[in-house]
Length: 83
Image (cartoon, rainbow, N blue to C red; front, side, top):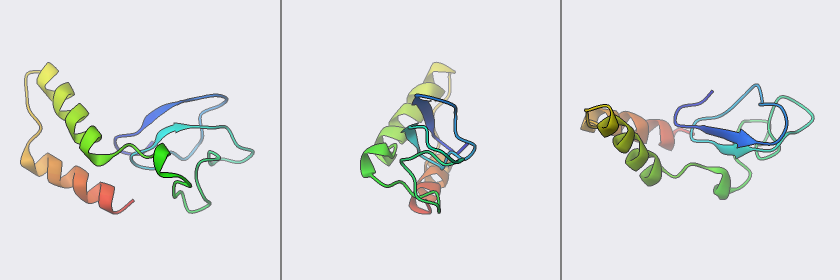
């Protein structure tokens, strides 16, 4: 399961879930229909946007009494840019 991915949809969970995925649709193979064979989303609407991912990660950290550090933001940004 990829970093900062949100898994929901119909059918069985795919074997491969790329970073910053947003939902899935069951396909006939191990990849969801929303992704190409290289694990690249076919459509931008199925990508968890970086600004939203950072905001949500920070909110979750604050719930736990911490805050998302600049280093953590940089790591997430780097992973997002490499997807």
